Length: 317
Image (cartoon, rainbow, N blue to C red; front, side, top):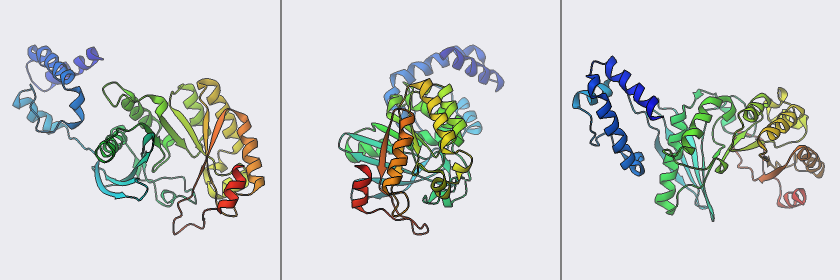
């Protein structure tokens, strides 16, 4: 990595008219300083002192910009959850959530500005997809939520879930790059097994995860194990049927040996009957998995409400 980086640095120095004879010394000094202050990298300001000439610093300012995401609004809930709106360099807004629990601190991050999948129960599904997030914009969310976790709960992040705005598998390359950065030694150095990517279900991309033999966890937003019902609430199912998803998930498991998590929101009088539970149980037989029953957070413009507690208990029994 250092050799490759050094080559890039030499090329930069020569292209912009600086003395290449000094490139080695400056590069080695930069590496030394970086290694000494690695724990503080995330807090270095644009005004920090560097062993780089003023001329080169000015040239860098002309050529590059640091477009870091920033916290725009933070909302503290009674359950200690912190819901954030992050502002991007182009003034687009995305959401990220810090979710505290007794033994973990989880960051929920977005992968796109908006979403194109139009899931009927999801607020983001009623927004147009404006663009994909860059790897650094995803990474910035994690860093900001980690800072919030340390500041408010005196504990670093332990887990990350890609369950915010957008469909991660429709921004595949950038999501993968962000995870590479999060797990890197000079990134957050987080184990891949502590990261979960959630998808609405895109069969060919699930197979690609298998081909890439990813180490992180995969979750499928299922919400119905019946094609007719799933088509009704998740139009993506019309091109990615439950049969296609089952085949893709079996392929994924054969390549990674990672169990899959199925997310299932119980909607009142829609997918909460015992026959729905039986269909879910049958779908679970395809491969090792676990099921998360999720409480619905209603939105004003969608005709869905939480199921009753008695039905939840009967469904899970």
